[in-house]
Length: 341
Length: 276
Image 1: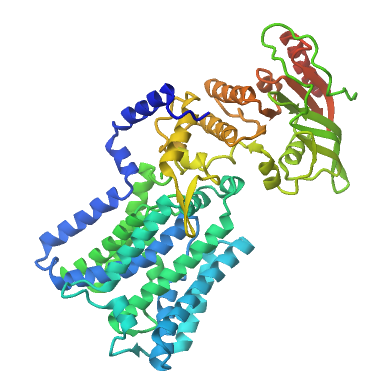
Image 2 (image 1 turned 60 degrees about the vertical axis):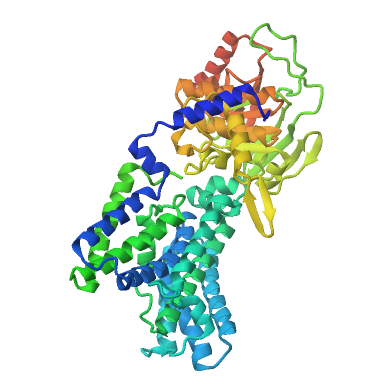
């Protein structure tokens, strides 16, 4: 029933293409999910370029790109998880927990730094594994599972460094790999890693069977399961990815700043979800793109840094983020973009 | 209530609208004296039922007649308390729905067939993706799947389908049903289980779905079409099995009676129900 060159099919195909060319602006926005947040980012950059004299200065670029890359890496994992229909509120605490474990092992106790990093990231993965197992085995909302994990990790972080700061004055080779400056550019390694990870998971989502399964699991778990997709396993793997990337990004932040406190990563669980939503990922699962979330991360960091440049107190920026988030979600629902892939 | 023999030889066909079903071979699927109880509550009483290749069997009954229990037995969700299941001439036992699916029994449920956000081709191949292995990676053969899905779906003549990349939520309910039926055929199903596939569909959409069912029959699939309304089943069914309170009360062969007589028979149970 799939004759390769039946005239019917050729005719049908060309009819497909002919009709596909005429698209309204709303349809174009729906077809390229990254377009709307991309235009938003362009607008924000344009605004700050006109309002400030130093938006494109090397210092500003460093600040924006490092904030964006750590949030962006966390957002990649969070986006995968949101597409399959789950949340992870523990990523912010994991963002501190993993580098704290790493630093305690190799800075304080002199363990081989690579082994220490492997152990720390292994622990991060275990955190995700527990989140996933508890959520899928007991069928409770991941919102609750990971909120529980948030407090567990917060307590552990307090216990591990109780208000101190772990500092490494001489960056080790692992730290350089994760957080060093790239030559004499204003950019640092986390930016490179962000692009590598984002590109890899863009391919995973669009080109691999696993990506198909992730979309199907979040889109409608019932039919997906009926068609043979192992939905529980897909969710568990994405929980692990989310935790792993949060921990890895936390280690990069430590490597870049050469120090870590328990406050590191505060609010990151919400910022990562915000980046994903600004980038077009649905809160209900089934829809989303990796590059959209990366653009969302750049939007967040540009607004944060830009507002500082025009003299708004630094901690005030979240007010703007909150307002923009709500507006974007209203616009998405209005345009019916939640629900297309 | 009488138990009519189900495996009667098809009598001399009435001209027009009658199709010759070859019932000399083995049926695709057969229930032999199947009974089922939920605890002490017996819901299916000694039901025998067979679907031959290329045959559409309509299973009709009111709510509580036992249609969904039978459907669950067919689809492998339930193991009957007693009686035997035979698939393609062999005794069969389904412990899970996956067992039934592996044998080629595809259930197309109203809301359980399609993931709305996925594009047509991704839906079409969901769970049966064509992939190329690279180490642990399973890389989708996207072009091939697009083409095959487009080829299969374009035969349906669905007006709203423009491209295999289009998300399925842009299709109507009936078109989604048709896609699900086409998909089941494409992957070599032997028996289609349809649970009220035309409920809540417009007349035109219903025609689309019935057309897809016709396609499936021509390809030699057995079709079990379950509905509470006989008028839905009437246009496509070769035989109609009337179920009441867990028992088969009537088997109507399309060749046995005229359309008018069928209409009278449809009115029958309604009158009985009204008299209660």
